[in-house]
Length: 241
Image 1 (cartoon, rainbow, N blue to C red):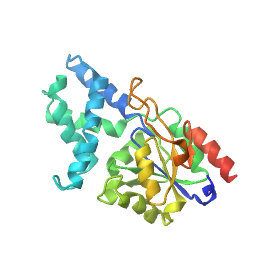
Image 2 (cartoon, rainbow, N blue to C red):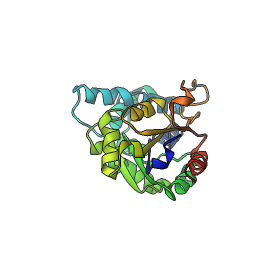
Image 3 (cartoon, rainbow, N blue to C red):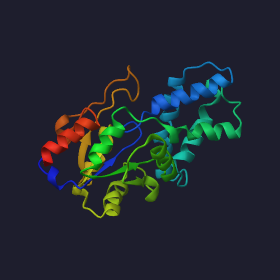
Image 4 (cartoon, rainbow, N blue to C red):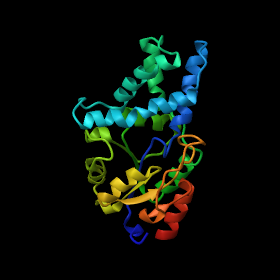
């Protein structure tokens, strides 16, 4: 990474990159179901819930829906799948509480330690489609040591819209080339790169489960590829000194 010395801030994708949404959602759904005597495939439930994420955001982009936060889109998608998993009888309070499971997602084992190390040298922030309240509650519960929280909600645009990456750099008072996006999703990184940001790819092979194919990517298309956040910190220290 030839321009690594110019990086002043690291912006992190959150769902799948920093936290384990699949494991967290499956565990919460299993708990809710067990209390009601319902058996089911809760890993499948988590995947089904997440499957509505991108299509819902696209409906906002194309004007089919007005601007909605991720909490609101998650709730819409939750209501659409509950019947299929035997949870259609959940009342409003239970649905609201289950929807907030996204606020309580567990970090990957290296996340807190890796972020803590990276924070010693860089400003670290979220750059997530998650809404501001969701990201704040998640950070508080999981002990994620962000310097600040940047949410797509601040721009009324979802990633990968250019306004999100450029908006993050603007809020931080730096140029896009001084901002590095860290993500487990190549498409997110490519969109950031197209706006002039630096990129670090941190694959999370367990994000979608053991039997899901790995995302295709060319290591040379990103500035860094790291095994986890601790490895990312090591590489950045070596590059910058």
